[in-house]
Picture 1: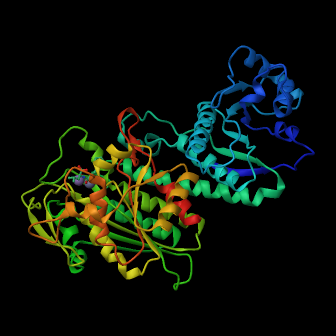
Picture 2 (picture 1 turned 90 degrees about the horizontal axis):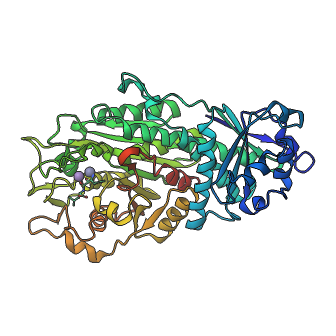
Picture 3 (picture 1 turned 90 degrees about the vertical axis):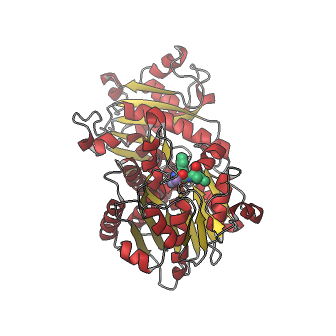
Length: 516
Ligand code: BES
Ligand code: MN
Ligand code: ZN
């Protein structure tokens, strides 16, 4: 889907200018109050009602357009409309909430996404190839975030794994979407800002699509090697510096914790480093670290069989970091950003790590591996030690780390853990403005007690109580040299059930954070 603004001079032309556009669909949003009385339609609605020979008033009277947020009405044009100046092939009416002043409150953000998605679903269910969205909230700063979201959510509706990867079904069921181009109405004054917001929305969507693809691909295709190749291709496309280290180099780095996880697998591990230099070399980089377990069986502490296929999504942290790099590469972000991805499989075998094994991490700290299924923290702790060399401004790791986080927060918020209030606040805000929200969880040292081991510096599990907190506490022992936040995306990276699929989260959050 392409995206661009159509500039309309404010005032003089108004609704007539929008009506004169020969697009597949003209989309108008309005508040519920405006359609409470079908006999008194004013402004845009009044003009459109006239041009449609009263079709809008009639639909309201017949109860086909309820005055409530999220209700929509799609009308197909008749030849007669054009005579009265309405050139679109379809007219889509979308009822919004009262007045959306800011996305900063969780409630208004959720409402916004509800009616916006309802409108987009109606649009994409039609056969329209292009559309003009008349977006009334512009041009406030919030309005620009909303325009970014319009593109992000439109593309969300258009993502079809089966259409992007038809090779997995002998008779591909999903067709590539017909919808190709979204125009957003604007007046000349804010056009540049709006154009920028739309470009950002597209870059975020492209990053999310890549993240979803990597997540959804089967684990026999999306291996550590595949992630390495994806990183190399990305580097070529966007001019990043890239390094993909293999087992030998990982051994030389003395990443004993990472090596313990990959030990049972025959598929080779990879350690991927992607560097985007958007500012001077002097500027301290932001480092993103992504968990890249391409399949998590649990190892010798084997997981139960039911639903185990979903552990192909255990590389979604890595995928989101790669998707974020794609977005900032496309936007030529003027910041230094580095992505670091430890990636391997967690498999049981005669050579696999045993519960009780003690290993030495790259930091020198020893770990008693009491449960081989708590492997994410083992690959991450070595990556978190590795990144010290970059003297980072901030490090954010992203991981499908704990089932406990799914129990705590479900699929709504990503778990955020950080000792640094300033960084935490920035991530909370970025989450609200991208509708990719996080919820701050505790990280008190009191929880560190649970990681005590009789035989090593620490155990890799802290028991069932506060499972997502003790996992974060484990990582905290490796991040003392820099500002750090941890995002547990176990509940938000993919959806289960009939709509099984990767969500592309937290790419919007990370890109918003980096753009702010
Ligand atoms: N990848 C899982 C976490 C996970 C589980 C994410 C289910 C999403 C859904 C992780 O490696 C894991 O197995 N964690 C264990 C830790 C436990 C052994 C302390 C868990 O959460 O059960
Ligand atoms: Mn596991
Ligand atoms: Zn895992």
